[in-house]
Image (cartoon, rainbow, N blue to C red):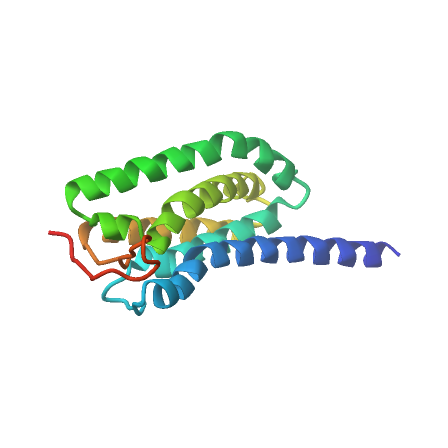
Length: 193
């Protein structure tokens, strides 16, 4: 009886951790991989897209899933919803500030800044990942002594993502296609100056 209860609990927690990882992988880069060719009519390539998005965001999904599994008895979801009251508005404000800053610097054109993938990244990815990832990591790493291998995975994946973000800041890429919302189609591709 005790073994059955332990197995059921483990399966439920493992399923929840897998669900967290899967959700985050769909949020980013999943949407980008689908929307770029369908809406912006451009292929996702290593030359044009940021490694932080293509490889780093799945690493964050892995880190969050492992951290959620490590947290086990911690009330991760309940505290995540409380955390969301601060993290979601902060993510939205950061997304708005960043896109304005990037257009002002000439990193993106207005057509790129209003593309579906850029809007998704700024106003969905930042609030969602900004809510789930830090909270899961904090809760999971608080139990690191019980799960040292999990802690190594969480820290390593997060550091790898950080390195990919730093690389993205140094090497500009197209990153997002262009989109004309008035005609609901891709506008002429224009590289920022």
